[in-house]
Image (cartoon, rainbow, N blue to C red):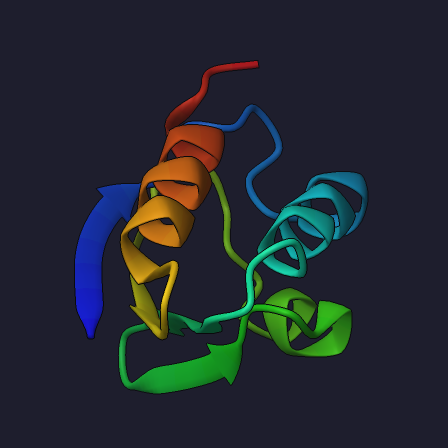
Length: 85
């Protein structure tokens, strides 16, 4: 299992469009991928789960992945949320 805590630097956080892009990217991996904020953990491959966390810019989230491509999933997704756009 791989885990990494990152700060969301996306201009709008993980809302609507950005959340959809995040989920689309998470679905490219065969590993189970989760997103955790505070005490809530959701499936990162679920748009409803990701949006339910209401993640704004500056929030800290933890990416968790378990499977054959877990390290690549963590690296790719952390780069995505840390990108300032």
